[in-house]
Length: 465
Ligand SMILES: [Zn+2]
Image 1 (tube, protein in one colour):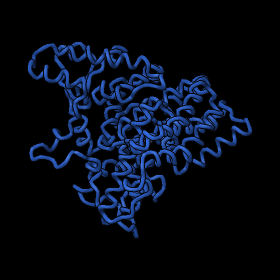
Image 2: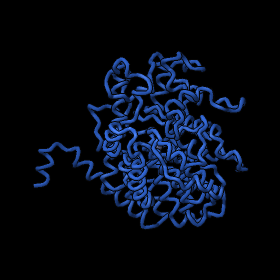
Image 3: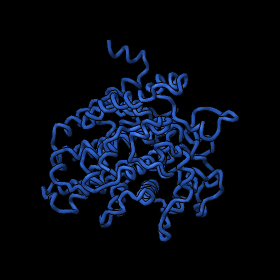
Image 4: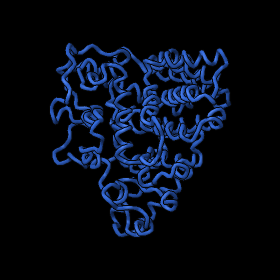
């Protein structure tokens, strides 16, 4: 197992040359491996129609229904009574698809293939022309670029977008696997590297890549941010390895199977998840149950006697519900005011972990502008697309979702003022490191950039004069 964990990482959707396979003597080629000649993640998704689960676990019944609403008819629950738009049926698999009508014959696996990255674009033509050529170059190119970036994975300026291109869209698997090694979790908890990789492959596949914002790239970004926070002195010296393990798992799974719309949309359209969770923390509860199901399916933590694992994981994921922020923040602020926050107290430590999870989730405006600007464009695109669908079905457009009256600068200004700034101000009081001060500096500077970007060119020019 030691040998496996040190072997080079390969992208998911390329044929693996035989000589590389031979070099990886310890790798299993069983059907459970999607990495080395096994089914692609998409095929794995389909195959996982029969997810392994305990018969007592009701939650798994709806694990993959988000994508099946159209094809298989109504889900197991009756529509919410009185939901004003329960007649609206949305195919969430294609919800954010902007690629136009699908051509005949292009359906199925081909249409799901990932777009070529710059790296793959350079190499793929060459490989197609010489199928028996020097395929070992794949390993070299991959290792060079990705390894260089992973060496700086603790940098707050880490370019997650470039990393995702360098890994050919497999940033979540590559980065998280590396962080497990980096924190010593793989060795400490005797995690099977193959199970770990299988788990991460399933996690990555269960994010909807067509969502402009809530996709695996966001989860990767949150995981990288979580790692940066875990390295801060107050956390690094007080958290247990078990805390760190759960924090990383929560970060990477916290938006699993996100449909690209908000809770209000699910409630108004009478989605079965809204009924199941009684219109409260609907998405977060679903992400949590999906995470638990994938952990069970992979068997990653089965050998560990961690008590309340599922509940602790759930409480971290549920903390990302922004509508509940004031509740968490009030408790955190009270402790800071009274100066009685003790990291030796497990309940205090868990509250800090919940706040850390919240910070990692909404830290986009605290990143350097060149990264922050890309995130703000993505989240606006997702909001506006929901607004377009609402208009199309004659529904009232949700707040911040109308492309005719809202703008990125307006959306971000409100988000920063009411949500991000209050949270990070308290975080800075608690952490008080150069990183926390730097994040606040970005947070105060980025709205200025945003405002300038949204100005008409002529007005921007006149301001410069
Ligand atoms: Zn999130």
